[in-house]
Image (cartoon, rainbow, N blue to C red; front, top):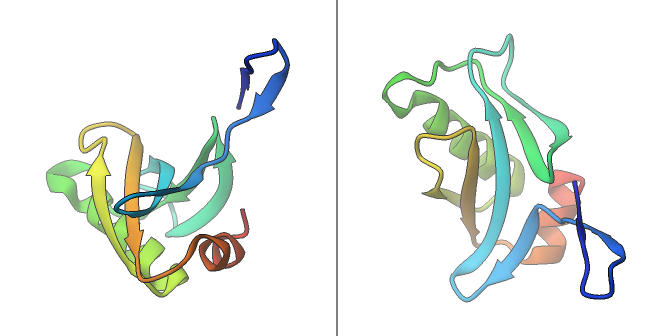
Amino acid sequence: MVVPGASGTVEPVEPVRTTANGVEIDVWVVPNASRTEIAGRHAGALRVRVAAPAAGGMANDAACRLIADVTGGSAELVGGHRSRRKVVRVLGVDLGELRRRLGV
């Protein structure tokens, strides 16, 4: 995804950023997938496919577990609890290492 910049140019949107509370990732979650995996990008977010259904927050939990496993940090959902587009905070991993492990 791209957005217009201040000068009218088009700038890419990065799904990973540092905040005062850690590193946050914009995530697009696809529940009921055939397998649980990180599957590239979608609309400026990291696309995460999970086998778990959306009901009862199971897809949210599966997405956070996958991100924690891949990054080696702890992952917590901080936004988008009822949406496919979510914000996940990762603690214990710096921005450079997180980008390397996620391939973004």
